[in-house]
Image (cartoon, rainbow, N blue to C red; front, side):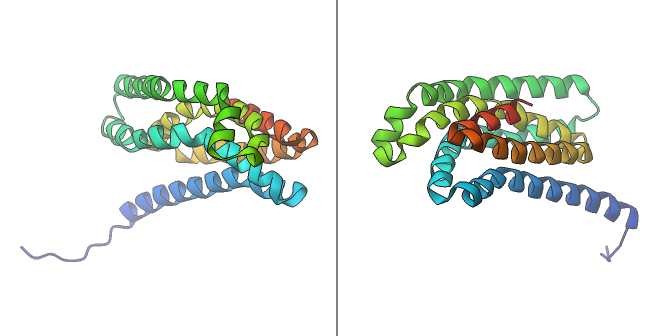
Length: 198
């Protein structure tokens, strides 16, 4: 058996297109997640962006530690059975229900105990991030829908649609941050809540 190099333009185009869409989605998601910090730092300074970033990162922590690991197995299983819509629906609903079951108690706990938690763990200088954390903790519960939706879209090769959704979401984050800054950190947190809900 002899191995030789074989270039198939059709296959290369198919896989390159898919990879480019994934990369574009990752870039837009990163820009969306960092836009608030950039806008707040330019308009309100480093102290305010530090407080907001603390609230935002703590609000995302339950999902990032528990929920992010579900994406790859769900994606692989859905991609394997992409022609079986019943199987995709089952996997989607199962992953959403598991994510909510595991992360909801943590989000509710963060919402209820934001002020004492921040005071004990980070100190009095971070107390201004407690109220935004309460809002962002509940808003971050919606990430339990976002991640499985991304797995469905990727498994069914609808990344072009997701890219449009991510760009619209990025624009909404920028608008919500600018408008929310009129009411300080609380306004920005409510802006993020509305954006994640949309």
